[in-house]
Each structure stands twice: as structure tokens, then as C-alpha cells.
Length: 76
Image (tube, rainbow, N blue to C red):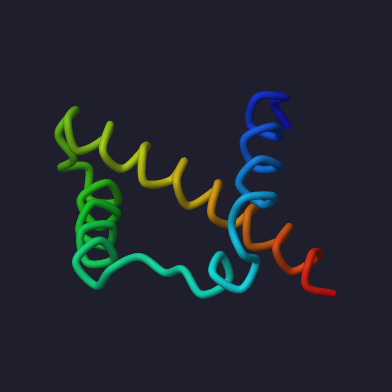
């Protein structure tokens, strides 16, 4: 992993209650938007702006996944 990414994850884990991290989930609207963008991506109809938005969503999803994994370690 990239060192800056690891440092950010470590910082957030130290500052946020692990239970709060584990409880986080995107809003229904954000989930619906992600599904729409994924459908458009699969069908080849994604605009460049939508592709950038989807890429950001995937990066946030990766960060949240790593945070939740580390939060689980902290809770154990």
C-alpha cells in the first residue's frame, strides 16, 4: 500500500471510534448512484465525468474497506 494511504488510515483509526467506523455505510442515494454508474460502465455509456465520479467512489470504497478491516483488528 502507498505510505500516505497507510498514514491516513492509521490517523483515522486513532481518532475515530472503531465501532463508528464499522457502523458507517453510504446513503441509499449514494448506493443508487454507484449502481447506476456501474450499469452505465458495463454498457459502455459512461461519460468522462461519470467515469471520474465512479473512480472516486471506488477509491472511497477502498478506503472504507481498509478502515473497517483495521477497526475490526482494534476491536478484537
